[in-house]
Length: 385
Ligand code: NZQ
Ligand code: ZN
View 1 (cartoon, helix red, strand yellow):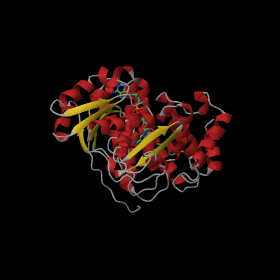
View 2 (cartoon, rainbow, N blue to C red):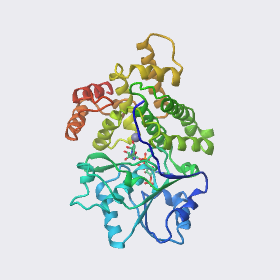
View 3 (spheres, rainbow, N blue to C red):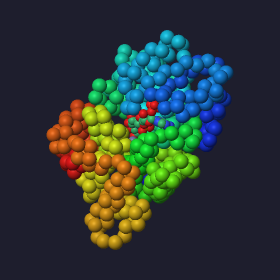
View 4 (tube, rainbow, N blue to C red):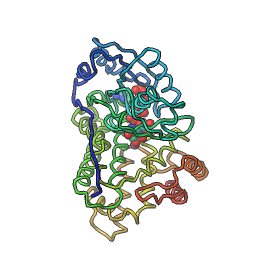
């Protein structure tokens, strides 16, 4: 196992009717900005629950944070914070709203000339406004982690700062019942790939991390299709297990002390930035291709994954790896997401566009061993055609 330091300081309130707890989580004298997206929280009752919980607080709101949150939109929220003297942010939504709010929290306290440098130049963020989260879409893990991804004019890049990790997060599975089947499958697939990015590398004898990771994968494989099936799609137990799986997939625990990959994500971000592909649907295309091209470097873990997740023990090593990749693709297809660039009508000329973007963003040494050069990315994207 590798050395690690681990802390996850986010207070989690899990379960039905837990939105009420924000009344006590946010200091009574805070001036709160409630941030949200395109309005789903107005139609599913979440907004009303938040408003009720904040009835004794001073608060304003900022709406319209879009999927893959835009820098320009977020900077309007920063202006509002400064104009109204606000000092606490409550993000109510999915990964985009929470990520966007992390950037707002950091940019509102940024002392340099241009807040975009937090992302473009990875300027360290030492201070940020305190942030709480009410999660409405289980997928990204953003509700308890220090990461955020922001898009600006065709460039989609992450930043990481402990100062923006939410102070608390409310996870009420019942608020996920209003999600469309597309967003449900996106969430399950994103969480699945988060586990794979931290699990499918090379062995370092990290038994706890491996078995926790495998437990999350098995849960997503078991519960994901149930959340899409007519007869169980409104089952709160199913939703609860998916919600907790997605949080656990990217809260730092399974990634502590192990090598991490993240190439599928970096390639996927370019697909989203260039073509507007949903985040999870970019990953369901990139991950199988990464598995194929990196099968030698990942062979030991691929074989472990084959056996422990899919029960594959017959055949020689290469055959078992082939079967494990095929099983992964079949799972993604059962979750109704694409697994090839051709499934979303992209082709060879688009691979060149993506490679140019990767180069522009200096994504030229990806993967757990930094061996995914542009040439290897070309092979991966060609394998995804
Ligand atoms: O905007 P509203 O109206 O709320 O609608 C949203 C949005 O259209 C809707 N939605 C959310 N909760 C709902 C709901 N609709 C009905 N009922 C509900 N309860 O779902 C749509 C998608 O929301 P979004 O927040 O974009 O989805 P997701 O949670 O998948 O977040 C994706 C973003 O997170 C980033 C992605 O890159 C992408 O920008 N990620 C963040 C990570 C992190 N912070 O650690 C890691 C991830 O790998 C990922 O990169
Ligand atoms: Zn993701």
